[in-house]
Amino acid sequence: MFCAEKRENMTFEQAKAKLSGAGQEHLLRYYEELNEEQRENLLRQIEHLDMELPKMVEHGVKEAERGVLAPLGAITLDEIDKKRESYETSGIQAIKKCKVGAVLLAGGQGTRLGLDGPKGMLNIGVDKELFLFERLVGNLMEVVEKTGAWIPLFIMTSEKNNEDTVTFFKEKNYFGYDPRYVFFFVQQMAPSVSYEGKFYMEDKDKVSTSPNGNGGWFVSLVKAGLLDEVRKFGVEWLNVFAVDNVLQKIADPVFVGAVLENKCVCGAKVVAKADPNERVGVLCLEDGKPSIVEYYEMTDEIIHSRDGEGKLLYNFGVILNYLFQVDTLVQIVEQNLPLHVVERKIPYINENGEYVKPEQPNGYKFETLVLDMIHLMDNCLSFEVERDKEFAPIKNATGVDSLESARNLMKKNGISF
Ligand code: UTP
Image (cartoon, rainbow, N blue to C red; front, side):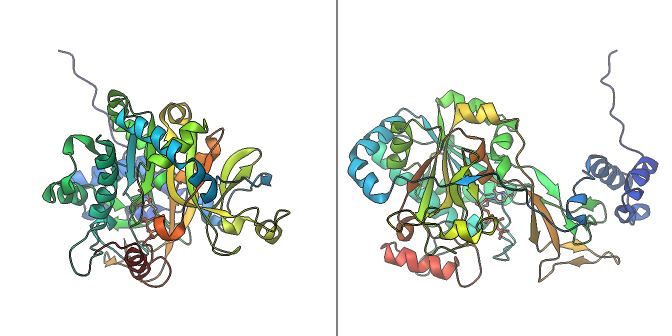
């Protein structure tokens, strides 16, 4: 009889050899206490550990060097207004033909907010219950009602929050959305390290991992087999958006139409900077290709440079709302994105085997970011939107970009909550 060959795990000795050369033997500290299954789990994780990651923090964290930057103008609010009708008609036509899908990035951990569960389950209401997920689905429903067409909605979760997210949507009856158009997929994870570059453990048999950033969303969607669904529906464009912007417009027909009419392969919603030093990623050109450059990667001279009319040349910040052409995504799916090292609070077990939830950042996570996908595109339409109408993210517990600031903006926009 033909039997499939059983794949053998790495042995304890092999794991020890792999780790000791890199000063990571502590991962085997509890090995003796583990049962057979736990031992196998741990050895499997060690086998797949990327030992290059800790090296990225050994000599301090450095971001990759940037190429030659040049400004990239946006189509501004005035220009959009002049063409609104035409853009909207084109967008509605595309949506009616099911050419547009939406991708909700909900795999993050919301560590700045200090949440335990999925951020989308946050109740942002005061007079009534209003969950972030509910608010976003409601926004998408407005377009469904306007166009009379369901928009396939792909929701990215992580190992940490998938079960809670899926259960929540089911319990809440998908907030009125047609479940035949809702698809969940789980993103990949990456290990976390201490400031000294030691891998953290989150249990005696488990290396600490966290979602590997939002840059892998398309790879994960493909791995989950959902490209078939995308193709089956005839979806040609995917609108990717964040979970925490309560004013998010999803599959906005005007935005879709503008990208189509301007014959671009992608589009990014942007807002004019509140002031030159605002801490946002700016959409510009890098070595002749569209790119998003963080405020700390720009020189003062670039930040303050102005055109003949005194307008800032690098004036448009991104709000994590992008439209990508599916065919182009397929072409770039194999290309690597830069890995960012992000300082975060990482729960771990200490030398005594006790679980510790730190109050302050204690190490680094490794992430790829969706914004780096823009540099893989031949062009990108920079599409200006009104900040007060479309950008109210909830990132922090208090102050800037918090629940309080988001509620103020919802009030300003006449949204009841
Ligand atoms: P953020 O960069 O704000 O990260 O994510 P976060 O995890 O939500 O919050 P912090 O930084 O820990 O406080 C922007 C968007 O990307 C998603 C988030 O869910 C959010 O919609 N995201 C982030 C993922 O889907 N996966 C990730 O690995 C990271």
